[in-house]
Each structure stands twice: as C-alpha cells, then as structure tokens.
Image (tube, rainbow, N blue to C red; front, side, top):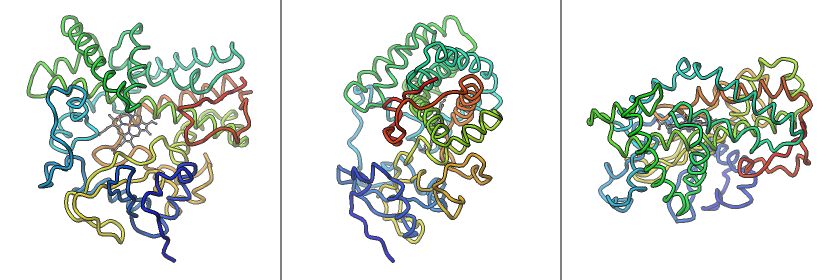
Amino acid sequence: MAATFAVSELWDPAVRHDPHQFYDRVRETGRPVLQADPAGNRLWVVAGHADVLTGLRHPAIGHEVHRHCPVPQQPALDPQDEAARIEARQLISLDPPDHTRLRGLVSAGFTARAVARLEPWIHALADRLVANARRLGHVDGVADLADPVPVNVIAELVGVPEPDRPRFRAWSAAIVSASPDGRTATVEFAAYLDELAARRRADPADDLISELVALEDQAERLDRDELVALVQLLLIAGQETTVDLIVNGIRLLLTHPPQWQALREQPALAAAVVEETLRFRGPVEIVPPRFAFRDIEIGAERIPAYDRVGLSLWGANRDPAVFDRPHEFDIHRGDVRRHLAFGYGIHFCLGAHLARLESRIMFERIAQELPDLRLAVDPRDVDAFRLHRNELPLHV
Ligand code: HEM
C-alpha cells in the first residue's frame, strides 16, 4: 500500500518527537520522498540503507551546485563578510578538487595510528572526570562526563594552550547555534587563530596548527581562510557529536540493565557499545543536504536536477534489510559494522577513529570505576532525541 506524506512532515513536532516511525514509512515506499523545508525548499528524504549508500557515493550529488546550475541557487558571496567567507571554505561543503586538496592536507593526522598516540592522554582525562564524579556522588552526565572530552582532545591535537580552552568551547557552542552570535564567534575565533598561528610560526611545536602554518606559508597549498575554516570545522564537527554519542551510550546502557551488567563484567565490550550506540542512536540524523547536479535516479525515484537530497543516516541504520531487529539496542549483534553513522565515501568522517577512541575509553572507565551508576530521574523524562542540549542527572 502506498503511504502518503504531507510535504513538510519531516519538521512536524510529532515526527521530531519520534523520527523513526517517519523513516520506517519512507523506507517502506522503496523510494525517496519529497518534503518542503520551512523555507519552502524541495528536499528528497532518502531512508533505505542501499539508497542512502547510493546517494553518499553518487558522482552527480554534491554541494557546489553553482558550478553546475545555470541559475544561481545562493546569493553571491560578499568578500567583506568574513564569517560567510570562512563558512564557504569548509571541507564538509566542498566538492573535488578543493575538497580533495584540503582533506589531503590533514588526513594523515586522523588515521587510527595517528590518533592512537593520544590514547594515554585520553585515559588520563577520563580518569580525572571519573574520579571527580566519584567525589561528587551526583553528576550531570552531559556537563561532568561527556562535554569536557572532545573539546580538550581536539584542543590538544590542534595545539590550543590549556588556559584558552574554555573560550574555545564557548566559540564552538556559539558557532553551532547558527544565531547572529555564531557569526561573531566565527570572527573572534578567526582572530584568535591568527594570533596562535603567529606564535607557532615564530616558535613551532609538535601540533596540527604548526603543521598547517607551514603549509599556509607555501601559499598554493592552503590559504588563511581555509586554515581557519579547517580548524573551526574540526572543533565543531567533533564537539556536539561526540558528546551526544557518550551521553546516549550511558543512557542506553543504564536503561538496558543486562547490557550494562555485561559491560561491567567485561569492559572490553566497550567498543561494541560504541558501535551499537552509533547505529541505534547516532549523533547525525541526516548528513548536510546535497544537490543533484543533473537528473538522477535513487531507488525507484527520479530526482530532478538541482533539487536537494537529504540522506538519512537514522533511516539507513534501522533498515531491516540490513539489521536484524533494527529497533532493538543490542551490544551483542554481529551486523553492527554496516552502520553509516559516520557517513561514507569522500566525506566519511575525518574524526571517526578519534571519536571511537574517546567514547570507548569513557565507556570502559565508567564501567570499571562507576559500577553503581544509575539514572537520577525517571527514564521516561529523558528526551532521547534532544539529550545533548539538556542534562542527564546521574547517581554515582
Ligand atoms: C564528517 C559524523 C566526530 C570531524 C562527518 C560526517 C558524519 C560525521 C556523518 C559526514 C558528513 C557528510 O557526509 O556530509 C560524526 C560523528 C561523530 C563525529 C557521529 C562522533 C561520534 C568527529 C570528530 C571530528 C570530526 C571528533 C574531528 C576531529 C569531521 C570532519 C568531517 C566530518 C572534518 C568532514 C569530512 C569531509 O567533508 O571530508 N562526521 N563525526 N567528526 N567529521 Fe565527523
């Protein structure tokens, strides 16, 4: 039976409350479904695992639509608008060849082997957070356990000195808020990075900013706006997402007691907890929308040129064609590795190894050091879909 969809259902508060029933219905149609966003833009929502994969690797789907479309889809960039200029240079919204060049400059710093060097440092950070929680006896899982992890790790990697990190964290929150404060924060952040870059140019250290400064000095490889955009993206792409993963992992364990028990008995299961949390409740619902550069086909649907395409990772990760009992949280499942929580293809998450390492260490440490951890509120009062903006009160 063909399902019918209201054109803006995706943004409906009832659907926001539980998006999975919406994605289930989209998937069951076997094709993408057209939705109009609040601004009236056409967006094709894709929810089946095979279709999402097709979209993520499609050569005629991408971001820089102005290079393909005869009619401008966005207003021309004002060169005086620094925040807009930086935003336009972000890796995540570029196509080849600029995407390939910029990603190539930083990818070596994010391989499994490169990030493994940070493991002892992350262990020490996790130990401090867990010891602090033990001392307090009652904590907020968001502010006290998860939130300090990614900002400190990325600041360590980039080379932001410790006293500057609270400012670094505040900028990241302001930038993702997409408010006028975000634009101010982008400009302040850029000024701060200029200053940090000048210090490293005079006195290089073993950190990412020193490497990038060296590349910027060979002007054809990286310009100043690109440098700022890259560091800004590392900070914001890895902050809310990793916090969300750690907090949701804790919530899911504490609301599934046999699995929490299994992890306490066998902390090596922490890696499986990471993967199943990514599959079951990954931090990214839909990857940043792309455009079709020409008429294309996905599933049984023809998507007209220049329409927007919304590839739903939440939809893909609950596809019963790939995952057995997809709506069950189960850290023992064997099929989990096919999840798409980090995307796929050329934009595959640059920080995936780092995020896996940080969250695995946190789950291990929490299971070992805080065995009596439990929710301090009724689980029904925890809004699973907006958690990282709220709190997760815990008794230790
Ligand atoms: C890209 C998810 C953590 C840096 C992406 C994409 C996803 C994602 C789905 C692909 C977006 C697209 O295709 O448009 C996540 C999740 C994380 C996480 C679920 C945590 C659990 C991190 C961390 C960093 C990071 C810690 C930084 C160190 C990036 C960057 C990109 C990206 C730079 C853009 C890559 C490109 O365009 O080539 N991430 N991310 N992410 N992520 Fe992550």
